[in-house]
Length: 328
Image: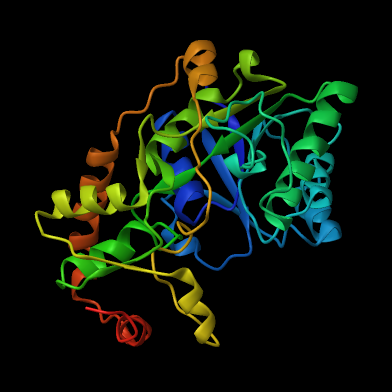
């Protein structure tokens, strides 16, 4: 269902998910304004209105949005962003009641529970302060939905990949495999992970705008495949048409270092499965990803080479120190 042209505010707009969203909204014909701290606005497409503001300064936020009217708001930034920050944004636009779409995370679920995680899975603080802040943001908006009729939709992505990824995950492995370096694996690398492409997420977010079926609802949004940690790397090697050598190690070795470096992507090392069902979004909203995991990695690999990232210098000092501790 394509929403009619609307006036839309995107909080952020210049990094990874929010930039992909801005582009998706423009393709749908919406009038887009971004609100951010003004650091990377050279990335924005032409014709975008900009409000320069630190959303965590609530007085500044109210001043920046005074008199503004929007049909939809996308709250994507995390600075970290508290529940109070999320509430301040929604309240700054009163008395209007735009559709607020909040990009939360699959990490609001209690990952001590059995997989897969659905929108009915109990939330919890398994992931610490990050989960606490995201849950508080969800609750602030849902409370306003129930008491004031504010149209609210909660979106919970998982690991997102694609060009301009702010999480050094797929590029981490590109860097090593193309140089013929071994990939260090903490433990056996058997924990399950699930990924979605940034453009699939952006298109889904754009399609939800103004859709009354999504009001007051939460949706998992990610790709349909799950894969082990080592399986993810093996798939990357297949896309790159290169061989990959794994060197498994006891994660306790990292305690020998005062400041250990990354060893397996930026945020793929944790001791639990992370598998989610997207059945609700598929059944209720007809949302389907365009990318498989392999095609998503292939598209990202093409971008990586186009940007000459395969030529950039990479510091492997920490990995070499760790490798020196491992038996051959």
